[in-house]
Length: 474
Image (cartoon, rainbow, N blue to C red; front, top):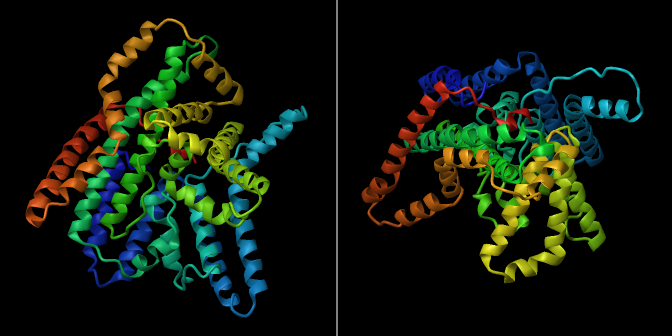
């Protein structure tokens, strides 16, 4: 089940709100149980046979958190062994289900072995809930978060349906207190509903429209792909993945707020960045901070020699790329970004700071656009050929003109929606001293616009067959 579906919005979510808010606020434990049941049901709807796998992951992390907490004062070695065991089990499950088939097929192909490798179905959301569970145990070990004695609370944290299948990756310490003592308010519910509706519109109206164009172009023969269509495909895919994933994050954050949770932001207008370094401070921030805190810093971060620092960056970004999927293209995508992050760190940063902002912005957009070709390619050979076609140059084709004209309005909206115009306007209006006037100028117009876009998006959902969600498979 995905958020952008009729069954989720009109059946599942309606039932969840009804049963959740029927329970009096003072019965916090019972409300949590209702939310837990719906979260497990949400996951079981799409992966009924893998609900056992997620429950097993929950048990591993719950028991490990307790043992790490018990041992860390007087038996630090036992605490460390428990943490290592938990890490191996978590990553072992992820490696088996996500990467076993890929590596087995690569091995068979490399050595010319004539056998058929069994296909293992990837459990939905395993990359996200594995990282969440693992971060909980690590934070307990580091004394950054308290251990949780109630297994239902850990189960709710890991399985919470708003962020279960596609993030953002929520750290336990962010929601630990809210699991026990959150306060659901009408203002939070209204704010969360607006955020959900705007995210839904980004997904349905922008990401899906751009995705249809990108899919059409990437399906063409890459050997004869005109350069103008190659660029259009790359640009529309960049818009698709941004509005697809950021829209889903908006929906997740909005849903969380409606239930009283306050998740951290996952995107901060990354397409306005003026360097690759800045881009990755703004894009999928929960994943970036996860790798920073649990891989990069433990490796030594930048407090090492230059050679070791470069090695650390390469390791982190190779893993970041490979986290996205079992394909050499994802690893190459991660290494691609690692190279430019290293270049910016040691060579390009001073130059980028000196040149006019428009040129550094073009530089960043150019590099990220190329990166998404690698990301969206089925193979490295396809990616190299596609990028080559982008620089083949030639006459503007009729198909390019047709697609641009047909999608001109959406392309323009995507450009403006990727800039913080609404954020700046909201900040400006929020400075109005009169509270009633401030609410009238900010919340009401935003609510009306969100409702209109939501209705249009629902009509679009009912009448369209294209509703892919890119990060659903990660």
